[in-house]
Length: 592
Image (cartoon, rainbow, N blue to C red; front, top):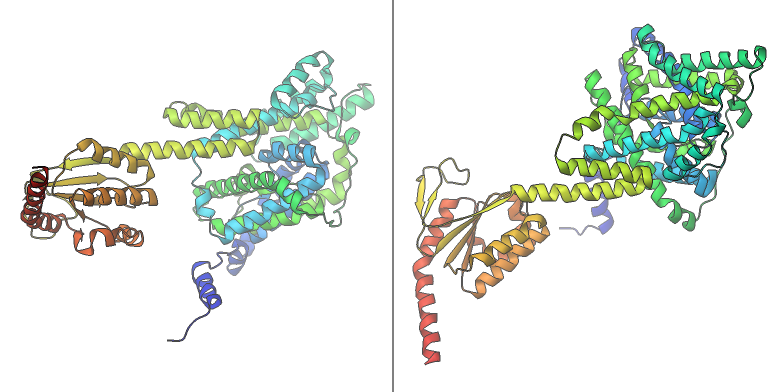
């Protein structure tokens, strides 16, 4: 047999086990595309583009960048997500969830730091897709998702209070509590006309669904408030209502790509922020795609979606954009207006590009208070207060995880919130599994009716010879239950001749469980107690073999069926009884 090089073995493993799962839905859609589908996608894409316009501008400004950067993110990021994505209807772009993270990164590391962190997050997302972690990301506990989403919603609301009331503040503290202290200290400087614009914006958005569900309320509110403020300033002499043009200089063109400097020091500093962007982007985009699947009946490819999100986040920073992810509200708007292929998402990006190139200068007249009102409505919709209320009636452990994640998000930051929340969720999970795993001790007689580990044509009841005990583990034998098993052995205190460890209900054994089992076998053998393993599943058997436990007990003492294990134990009793008696006599003789 010819020897194979390590490189050949690795290459074969990589091509077999790590085959890239990259299948963009756009190319699948083109195979059976038709004029009817294009007409539906065209209408949906135009409507989604109109809906995304005020949101992209608002998210850009709230994140600490100029309004056109929000539009550029929606154009480039939205195009890439639709062109390469694993969902037919996903709409990508800037979202409210990133406002807090992006704003904090800019304050600490500047715009170049944001670009580096976003690109790093993009690389992480691509790696997640290559490693097929799309399914794993969706296993993040729901209380954590609700906790940080609600926390982000409250933080977004807080960041908009100054513009909503027209307080004229510039250097507002970054942390939540200090913001509210500054707001209350400057409450007397609130501008009534500005506050009226903010309130009117929210009222228009709230009332629009009653008039028309197809026309986006946020766009109507922005247009109405912009025209209204222009008329007030021109003909009524009202002053002091700040607009986008008062704060930003707006460019109506796509910027040329620019590079940014990289160093190991910068990468190390920005790694936590990049990881947070990547995790949040993965969670939000896959959650959006999953919700869309429930409506359309299709099934998205989570690994392809992660890679598309990653590519978008790698490209966008070179044009000054902010992080990209799937947007649930815009995705649902796409579906509700007939969009069924990725072409609709590409059309949405083209619509936004045309707006940026030909109508970009008009955005300078939009009142800041109107954008604040739009974002407050976004924050309200993000809060999911109905879901929070239902979770508060659930298990106390879930309430605790959600509450801690919420408060850490608001008071500290999202990175800490996700890390602590996940850690708490893991502890809660281990505790719950440990409580559901039971260990029973059986003697004298064994009832095996309806048991899965009994050979065919065997009696329902089996007698256990004196000195034979059966220890049945019901549940996974992992680190959370291993010590419980060890404690039970110590409490028993007796010394049977044979211990049968029945493992028919053990789906897996981890290294801690295997170590405790090894310790039990060693201590039993020192006390001349014979160990037999019964009901061992093939996958568990492989683990025991790899950990060297099979060699300790002997392959002839491991059985799939309990009746064979009992027969083996009963047959050993006479010999073990004589050996124990001989040891007692020798011990007694030495004492005399």
